[in-house]
Image 1 (spheres, rainbow, N blue to C red):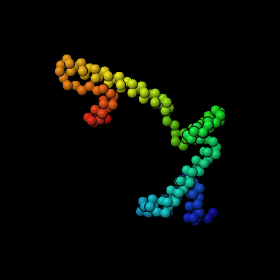
Image 2: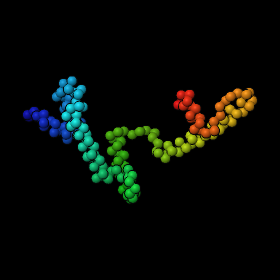
Image 3: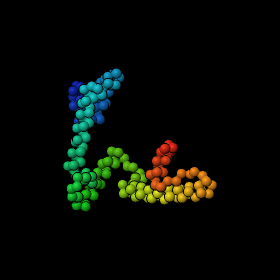
Length: 161
């Protein structure tokens, strides 16, 4: 079996973008490797990555595996088709990026945020009430806050946030 020319190796690497890094690293010295981002090979690499990403998006669209990311106000597909698309999309992303354990949905995070905002508001009311009572009791100059925003600004001013 004859050895491939550099052009043939580059063409093969274009088909598999991960192979380009290995190929480039094997044919250049350390100094050249350090400056590749400025060279034509770096531009070629960027072009290959861009083309690869575009092809991946096109495949997702064609397979309908991105239906659960409809954002343009279009009507939603039938439930079974939609859920199957989301299942395939989740599988593809999970295989390539992994799965985040104990993740929360946006609605769960919004609900938690609302609960925390209510708790903060009530805590600020209590703090202000006790600051006023203690100031009346001992003539102190404790600061009371009317809103959670004032409290947060105070924490920022003393660099606790």
